[in-house]
Image (tube, rainbow, N blue to C red; front, side, top):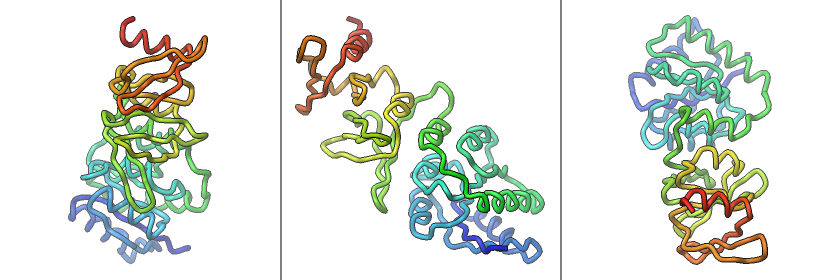
Length: 252
């Protein structure tokens, strides 16, 4: 068997110890070496970037970043096994292409079954999932995100939704503008629009999604287009459809 590299991410020391004990049991013949243990989401993202593991054993509820936010930021070839005490996240985990979902407390037999799934997934090396698949799975139906996580090299930035000025589409990426700074994230603007509260963000143009609170005024541009002037002086193109959406949102 190929030796696999594993990262364990859980904020509870006891939970990490149990996973470590199961992995290191001689009778399991897991062929897995633990390369890092992490107590929060930031540490998990950093460890995955540094050690490039084959498998990540990942808790859902953790400080700083939750498990689904971690999943957004790591290499999608990493096999992910969610390990949590909460069963309500199971469907969202599988929608996000998790290999397995271990519900605490679990026994050695259930853990061995998860290892078999990990080995099959690593052997397949399936194509990476689309980023929006992960982001849509990361939120319950009918809910909107309150923050956006972005990886910038080894750093992770958390942008509260209310501080996002606007997003600009750049092929399969979006450029996020907030408080005078810009970050690039691999995500389509359509999936970002679906994740944000439509009462707070409006698609003024096919390439621009704007925070309504940042719009100072709308000015005529050409016969069928306008410009949105933001509170920081930025100017955003407004299409006919975007103009209609904006007027409907503010009740004009």
